[in-house]
Image 1 (cartoon, one colour):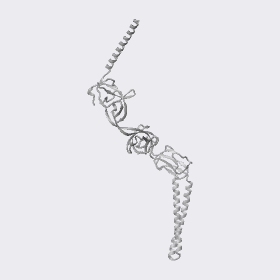
Image 2: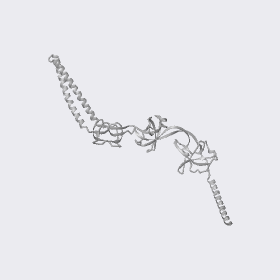
Image 3: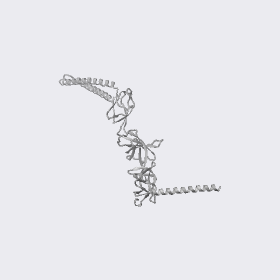
Image 4: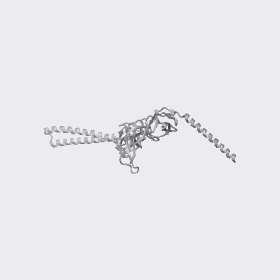
Length: 361
């Protein structure tokens, strides 16, 4: 029994010696790999930064026009398709106008007849005036001829008015685009009946685009008309400067959210219906800010080398915020007053020494 205990103690003692030797070798290795560097070290500063509320939205056209007919009639032609670009004044739809054409021809014939009647009445009036001067006709006869001329004039005016109305009806059978844009919906087909106020096609202007977004009741009073807002178009990965043009102070009774409309600058590639999000400045806060070039990526995470009181550096992971020119906001991981390596260097290791002459506030 004694021999067994002695053997176990001997084994334990041997393991302790091995572990001690390994620890000594590891410490030696660390001492051997630790290096001194002459690097620029800066102190972390705080800045007053705006606090943003991020709201999602959709790009829409400020000029969405539903094209309809003023007259009833069968659709003879629809000359555009969905997705097609159209110019202002371009012909979109033709309606069947055979009845209107018949009215125009009848009105023109009646006008010609009325003009002839008026010419005859004018000739009679001229002749009767001369006869009246010589006493060949009575005053009553002259008055009747003058009345006939006036009746002929009134008849001609009435026929001209009908002809003008028929010509207008003919013009309404040709429907043109009031704006430059793109056809987004075709709600009717050739042969369908067009009626007054019933949409045939819908056109959206590409030049006047808005971002429609919504804010909760806690933020709506912090946004003003004319306020600049950064908008990121998700599909294009592009940020543009928009302007608040409408704040609808009547919220949805269920969601308690209020509609905001922002005017977007003319940007190539931006289309109605695209997803975007806006950053509304609603407050201010103090936050650490460091140069972007101080950031180094390790293991898929971003961080910096922080200097301790012994002028040794240690890597620290950070939770970063938004970029501000050549700097970046730090949400967590650093405090104002700490020192960091100003320019990231992949050769730096944990525990490396920084000479005190290179530390600058």
